[in-house]
Amino acid sequence: MNWTLEVIVLPVADVERSIAFYRDQLGFTLDHDTQTPQMRVVQLTPRGSGCSIVLGMSQMKPGSMNGLQLVVSDADAARAELLSRGVEVSELSIFDSERDGGTFFFFDDPDGNSWAVQEMKIRADKPLIPRA
Image (cartoon, rainbow, N blue to C red):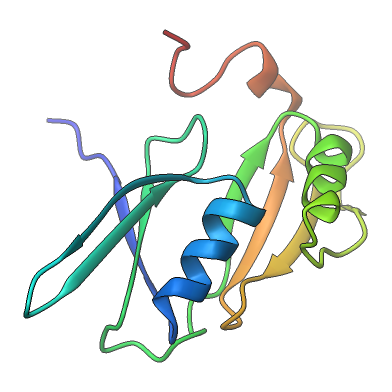
């Protein structure tokens, strides 16, 4: 039996502000924005990912998610893209220059949820989700 991680609930204080950040600045795809009298579910997915985020009010405090991680094939290019979209990102950190996967940079969303971006050059040739 496969067990796939497909959704992470991300606690935010302002759903509209978070949609603008994740969709417009990070480039995530807005999968759906569903509202009923009882709740609102907003789901976004990073390009190439099999796991989405759901924005919303939850029992968790906004900004309390730490250590979320994205993987890209080129950290320099990804960092430059985010900077061009107005996202405040850290400098590159190289923890292991000998092996693929040792380069990172970091950023926070408007609520303070923290993200790491890891470079794995192999993803350029071998994405986790095969291209259609």
